[in-house]
Length: 217
Image 1: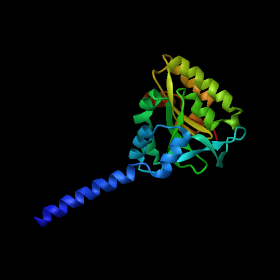
Image 2 (image 1 turned 120 degrees about the horizontal axis):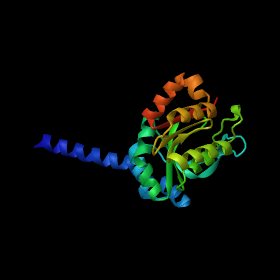
Image 3 (image 1 turned 135 degrees about the vertical axis):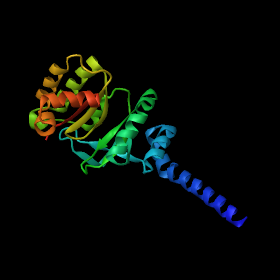
């Protein structure tokens, strides 16, 4: 009898502990109320990452540097690179339907985080992070313009971005994959020169990912 009671109590403590770990703290509730963010949606995100919800830092509009002493109307929570992709893809559609954009956010520390801002246009993610390829003469505005063109043609979501990289996934692949791969190489030479090495391998990667990983360093 005592053994059964001990097992039952351990189970209850385990469930209680799990619930406490993944429920919102008073500080998090205050933050979400201040930002007028959905506590229901952000509780769901926290239940996945099991990490604290924090306010997103602001980003310098000229340099693209993360300003950790200033803040943006958004939140983020830390996780691993692999889990960040998993959680973003799991929550993307649901969050957008409620007026929120969820994406992988990378700050100056190179950690991967899942971030949430208000909006329904994924291009706003790039505008917030000020992603650029300045070493190739590509301002944030130029990158947004090109991604916007691809979005109009193929449909896409922004999976994540950092200061000089971004990942997108297409709704449909380009019909002329040869021409598109050449366009990508011209727009972001690193995809081939420092990445897959050949245009043929780039075409294969685009098909396998149904998207792109772009970076400029």
